Amino acid sequence: MAKAKTLAITLLTLMMLTNAVLAQDTISSYNPTILPGNPMYGIKMAFEKLNIALTRNADKKNELLLEQLQRRNVEIQKLQEKNKTTGITRAQMEHQRIIDEIESNTQATQTSKDNTKKEIGNNLVVLQRVMDKLTSDSNPNNDKAIQSLNTTIQRIQNKRGVMTA
Image (cartoon, rainbow, N blue to C red; front, side, top):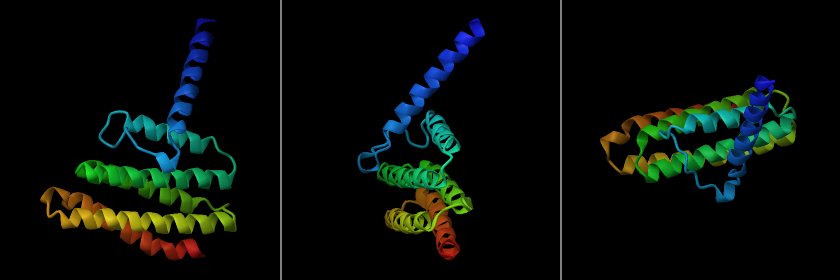
């Protein structure tokens, strides 16, 4: 009986935390407080992945992935503003993981594919701007983040042809 009660409380807590994390997801007003480098960032990523895993509809799943992609861009910009290049690399890795997941979703409808291509193109522009700002800073600490962003930009550009098929 005690185990069932503990399990129920744990599940309720998880559901509340998931809703709290996902409630801050309005992209137009997204101002991340939990960024790469914060000990809570891994938990934030886990909740986002859980939300995707629990979504059955392919169109809705792609929609959620595109929202995550936009959040990673906002985080990358915020980290660039704070000159936290190590965090940029982590956010960029999450960004690339999301793009890979979108591409592997073979059940996408044509509308989802069109929206996906558009959003990935928009994300490419943002990443390029961040990389340009980091390059213009002439800070040697930015080299790893610049290299990582450059690799991601090249991968996206190379894969955009795959997304059009």
